[in-house]
Length: 202
Ligand code: 5GP
Image (tube, protein in one colour):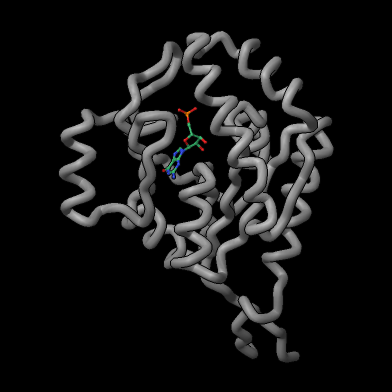
């Protein structure tokens, strides 16, 4: 009996949210529960926060090192966010996609727009905070940023909120479990999109 055997390249799954949108918990839960999905660890010039580990949350480098990496053309995309540099390594993305693994990019909206432009096949999910008030509460509750940083982040968030229209999917991040479920459903459905598949008959 001939069996239908479908294969596909990995896909890029971009998740962006205005700062404090509760993105990291969603990302962690997605990674913990979706087989075949790998996280792209970004490079950043921002200082390490307590509890962070070099190579796990980010690869932490000095600003000059980051600038050298830009000149060496090592990034798939990079952006300056809240005064620091962040970038996705080209090699990380390429190697995973070639293996047929899906890659999760937790990147800001500038990064999301670069990916959309470079890879029209990528899937872009925008996590929308339920309201500006809730966003501010979340930022304050994190206790990781100074008042000045919170002010900058809120100002940026207000501007970023409008970009939802350029994303493929929008989920209002109100109840965590529902948000994670929606993010999983979106990824799962995209994995079955006919135009991503190549067919081999055994
Ligand atoms: P944080 O400093 O709070 O970890 O991250 C700040 C912002 O930078 C978040 O919106 C995060 O998604 C974004 N970010 C992290 N890595 C990258 C990256 O490689 N490229 C871009 N464009 N943004 C990133």
